[in-house]
Length: 280
Image (cartoon, rainbow, N blue to C red):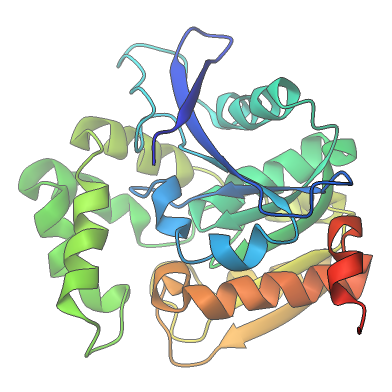
């Protein structure tokens, strides 16, 4: 699938995809999807058929990932810049507010978007996403990636990401997506995330929030999910027991169905799908 592109306010070209298979006679709510570190928007491929029948699904390749350009090494880079990319895409698409789905690092951006720009986030749906990575093993990844490269690092830690018996072709594809990234930029990206912890700000998230937890989490701390449950006022938790960190790739159909169930519960059926949902 060929992506659309736009130029961010700092001049970097970013790629995005729009999938809208809803009924054409009414406006569909927007669902903005933000992927994990070393991932790309294509990682959501198996989610899209379920979600795009009811929502305008917008998937952004984060800067330095997928088909988006990699920032120069000396460019300014912080969470505000990553949040700004999402806001600028929403503005380009004339989207005043969206339901935001974030997988791992994509959820870090989503959380900050919800805290700093609450009027732009209708709901927040997080998969394997804690309030930053300061209290995690992520900082140890940086020298390993620099020394061994992305592919070897991921293969050496694949049990942290998938259960035994996963189709090796899926793992090969997963790793190939990651190797589209520049290793030096991945170190910069992971370095930023592992320096951040906004646990004390979680109370600023006011929108309905779904938190999906990998039951066998190995990247973030389970304790951090407990903090999120305590501090986000309107939050529902679901645990995927026995699954390690990369639940978005390990159980994509289940993830999509849980997104849809949560949004239907909290917001009802989107208007474009009302006709289709009525019994004949």
